Every structure is written in C-alpha cells, then in structure tokens.
Length: 166
Image 1 (cartoon, rainbow, N blue to C red):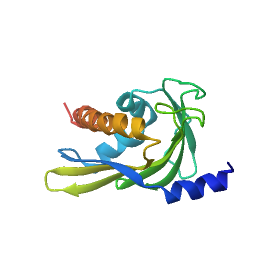
Image 2 (tube, one colour; image 1 turned 180 degrees about the vertical axis):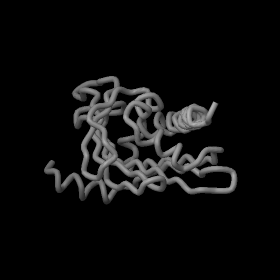
Image 3 (cartoon, rainbow, N blue to C red; image 1 turned 135 degrees about the vertical axis):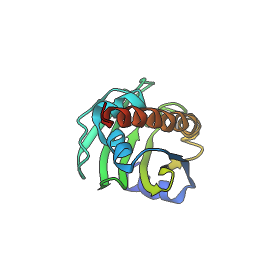
Image 4 (cartoon, rainbow, N blue to C red; image 1 turned 90 degrees about the vertical axis):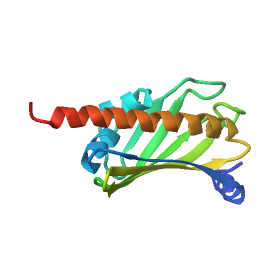
C-alpha cells in the first residue's frame, strides 16, 4: 500500500486520544523546563533519547523494546513550541508486519500548560491512535502517561527546590 493510500485509510478510520490532566504547585516555567530538557525527558519517560532540541522541525528519537520487524525506535519531530505554554511533537513507530505491540503508530503528543491559582494545569493529549490496530499501544500508553505525569510533577518539585535560595 502506498504512503498516500495509507494516509487516506487512516483518516477514514476512527482515531482515539489519550488525555491526562492535572494541576501542580509549580510555575509554568519549571514544568516547561522538565518537559523540554533532554536529560529530564529521559528521566520522566524512562527511555533513552537522541537528538532532542525544543525547536520546530527538529527530529529526535526514543528507543524502547524492539518487537518483530520493529527495531524499537520511536521517530519524533517537534511541530510546535510556545514557551511555557504549548509543546507538540509527532510520535511514530512500529512496523507493518507487527500486530499488537509494535504495530504501526502515527500519533501526535501535545503538552499544554496554563497558569492557575494553585500553580499550573498540565494537560497531555496523545492523539491519533487507530483502533483496533493500535489497541495495545493505546491501552499501555494510556496507563503509562498517567505515571509519566506524576513523575513530571516530582521532577518539577526537584527543580523548584534547586531554584530556592538556601
């Protein structure tokens, strides 16, 4: 199947999104640092990454467990950067021969930060899961992103503590 035909097929299918949202007692700039610093991303995502810069058009990769015809590489591209407000990147991986884990995945991750009285509202939307093909990823990542957001809160608390004068 051609890439163009695959895109048309994907648009014709029902897609689903993972949404995780919470309010944390940290400044938007602190959470932003945790979201857009390569070394910190590797900590909260718990995957090695290469080539990351928070610049539109920058391409970078994550590495996870390979399966079947897929080498475990997640290919990403920064799509939008609005400092302390919004960070968007693509998330693509998998292999056409895989079913379940490692099936083809072509999605977008959007982080939105909004200042609120209690700190910052952090909203994650990982969109574009085609079901049933991406059911394994949708279920696993749906649970995983909840843990990631908790870890971002913990790392933001560490960053806040580092900034306080002693």
